[in-house]
Image (cartoon, rainbow, N blue to C red; front, side):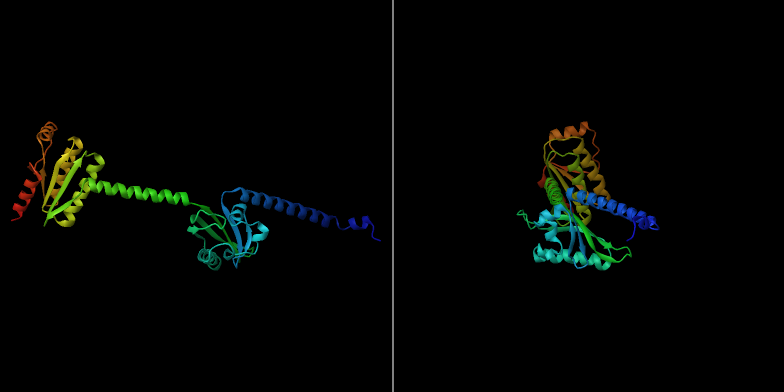
Length: 286
């Protein structure tokens, strides 16, 4: 029979090594529990798959979305949970990461098996998992719902498109004849509309090689600095492009206001009506 004294003799260092290793294992286990608990509390879906796309681990958010516990999900693939078309897309992305070692990131359409809300959009990042020797053993990924962001972006794009359309309607540039354009101005002209009108005017004159541009102010409800500045800037800029500005529809009140503002309208032909302006432009072409 071996006495305890004999066990201790010559084995003290072994016991110390075992205790050290046990402490390190417990520390690693505690750290693993901490990070898994943290992952389960995140409002993000995380997973770890092997090289064949089989589930090695997933956090609570992802497991809830597929209606499974971790034990039930282990070894499963995306083909066990998602429509085939989506599953093939997810699987192809995972295989790309595993085969190339490259990170993949993008926005994908997503359909959670437990959701009845229809397709949503998720931001996804997938990276390779490597062992101690650097060999790729699988992939891990993280994704989060960005449907609300995408909808907001789409609404903002629609709003901007509508704003552009409204501005274009507020300062349309109409071709009347060969190298003759007309821009009827209606309502109140603020700074934004004045800038848009001038930009549209210059582009139109340049693209169509116009010789005459009729600016009709019959429908302008108020004459102020913005309108005067627009007329002066238009006359100068259009002349630089080799065209003539004809101002039509000026009423007595507007003429008086322009005089009081000391507006320099040199080089602008002024006529009482749009019809007179058209006749002048057509006569000039002959």
